[in-house]
Length: 354
Image 1 (cartoon, one colour):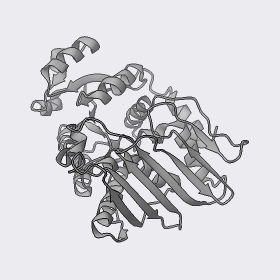
Image 2 (cartoon, one colour):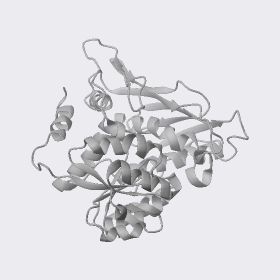
Image 3 (cartoon, one colour):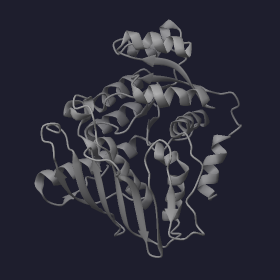
Image 4 (cartoon, helix red, strand yellow):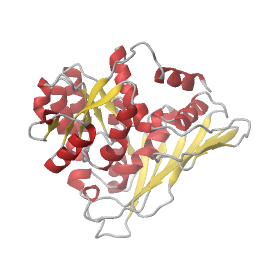
């Protein structure tokens, strides 16, 4: 196990704060909260489910019964701000449609709570900056749910790239997508989602290129394809884009709502290759390298458990958590450059963070 992986594993068993658990409130009780987040919190060492926020009274009743929550631990979107008086809530996890991340992050920060926000962080870089400012003003941490950065295969791939185990990186190829179903879902409404496949799953491929290189893209060229202009009238279906990084590394990426099977990255280096396929799902991830003596294989882990406990532990120990809001902002700056390139038909420069 690499030094970085050993550090992550050691933190998972950190005994310095035995029994200390931070209370989490889940805002939005959809599929992710129901099937992934709440079950993970039941297993967590440093986190626990303390409250929920929902716009559906029936869901509130079911969650109270299932998780033994008191009546005053079920908030509505209207009563959300009352969490300021709830000492059992330390962290608010925003699990809402993308367009609502900005509002509820700022409201949570004003209530004096740390914030963990699902990706994409917001629908624009401007909103990201305002979310960061609100949490900084409240002296509270803002973490973004980039779960792959806590998954062992991805961590080892980062080490292989950063330590140049196969020599300097030369090129990256990454993609993630699937055939989306229900045409009435919020992900196909621009006002709620901000975009289509790129905002939802393309961000994983973008992230992989960023955390493998350890750099931010400086130039992007992109093109969009639609096979169903009715279903995808408001958002993108398939986008291909190319990126150039300061070191000279290049990347080709793909995201889609049009077909299945796109779930990978390949890193081409001077002396070999490595990658993952499948790469971004919740389980069943598989890695490989061009050298059988340097395997990329680890046990499967609960990504959501890992990221939530890492956030709680950072707060308990007084450390800055990464990936923070700054990382979410960097993704949106690149995403906005992708959309600008599609609109202009030209190569676009990525706006700088500061």
